[in-house]
Length: 121
Image 1 (cartoon, rainbow, N blue to C red):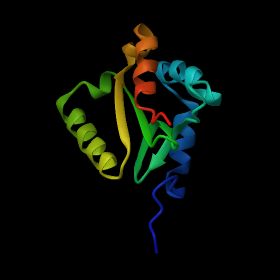
Image 2 (tube, one colour):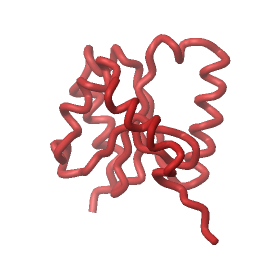
Image 3 (cartoon, rainbow, N blue to C red):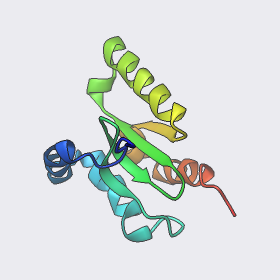
Image 4 (spheres, one colour):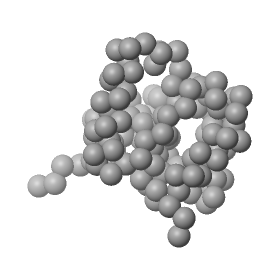
């Protein structure tokens, strides 16, 4: 039997809670991603893949966007993030990360970097 990769039922409660309490940076970026606003791509927020809950996910592009705040600015957390990114990449996902302040201070370049990871057909 094939193991479920996306939206594991046991993570549903955590995904819902995270959606209700987005960080200011997540809420700001979500305004620009929701309802297919970016090049017609559908994004999900707080989507689970394996046992990870990613900030934003576009299934069409297999693209994961992570926003990093202060909690990610220490060695132990960065090591954990790197392991997670490698694990997700091994499954064929593209993971891109932005520091929270980038979303506020450089939104056009953040959106362009996201677009640059789209598979243009």
